[in-house]
Length: 328
Image (cartoon, rainbow, N blue to C red; front, side, top):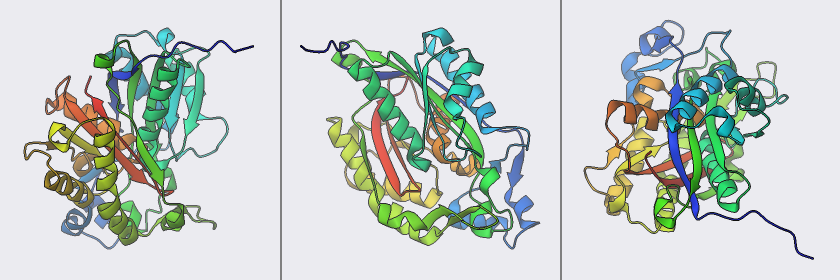
């Protein structure tokens, strides 16, 4: 006796994007009033000029709902067409209930498969790969993938090493099936982890429960290990670095972003390849940074529908993932 399985499809494609950020802007000069720092010091080390911080009454789920709703609207689908919701996040204040089911219900998506995924700053790429594989296997038809973070809940605002970096926001994508191989718009994932380095980013097990990061250790790891992941994702998609129109890495640090871009150009990427620099005005929003940066670039007209984008995320765990996608 054999089981009946859903019919697979050739792959998946992104058909909608959306994002949101809090209105409250915190500049480097604002932070200098609280900790020993200054605007130039922050710009030189992480490239950030300002970041957005949510007020105490705005939740991670609130931001996920807004970004997810915008992505669904952009896709042309109705909420009732979505059958699976994935929320990538590492900043829920409590593990139960999850963000995905709440978010889905508030958007008007009834009774979907809904779960959270925690791969920290690599979370969106992990969730996108998971959603694409669910579609390819026939387990889902239309998946809403959201990265949403309220890092301000976990930051010690007197710790100069972290308060200058992290911020709040959400970004989302709607993923659906490709009916022919030529329609496939999400490439194979290149992913992995370095669990031996888990201590360099963690939540302190003391009375503060705040985020701790060994910035220099993360910087050295990312500037040497992430470009090979990006190159592997390109190769798995059957492309070359010269095929990439836009690079959208996790917005962790502008110096890391520039280092990855430099390595890709050394391996054959075009000089005119555009590189996301959303961190300058958005800060590091963990799993939200990649979809938010891509959505901002599309809104600004610096990327166009049909172009090839390379996404690559990395962060606590340490976890990393990347894939090539076609811009919707």
